[in-house]
Image 1 (cartoon, rainbow, N blue to C red):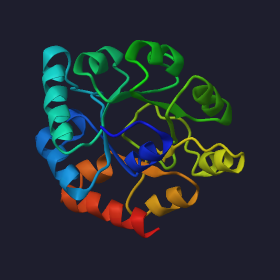
Image 2: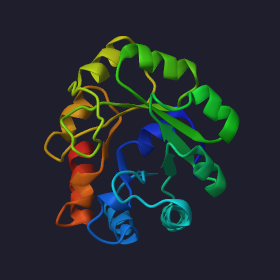
Image 3: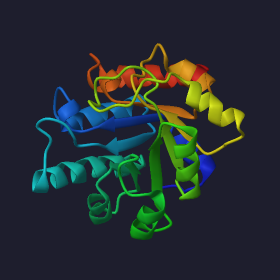
Length: 219
């Protein structure tokens, strides 16, 4: 993986694909392969929800997906599961406000890994930055059904607010983002968009990813 710095992370965040087996209509390995063909720039393994894999089955799927990412030099991030990230030597982790702090996680995974933190307020964002997060995931920007316990939809106002305050940490918008509304997230000041079902449930995973890249790049 390229060196971890703000500029490289901004590039990684352009099209941040999040997926687990419960999000897929077919083999997750095939879905990820097609998404990579479409141009995704970063992948997060998020194995949650009804019917999610656990134990050895979860580890085996994560290993397959990580191998595919490595073949294509796509950073592989693990959602929440710090021990899984360590066992796989993943490129980083992403955590929410209910999880351990970035400061604690940094001590566990080392200085050469990416740490992303979900934030929903300016105060949460500032704390995550103070704790050493490499990027922030802000949202939900739009209504989403993927995360059952999602916070209140806030549009792009938090992204815009952080940028107006001069906060320049890499930012990615999360929640309900589609091809049609993705440009508005970038316009507010985000470096990229994170997507689940707009890619996994598309008639063509590759085409959907490519259209996101085209829309973001055009903006």
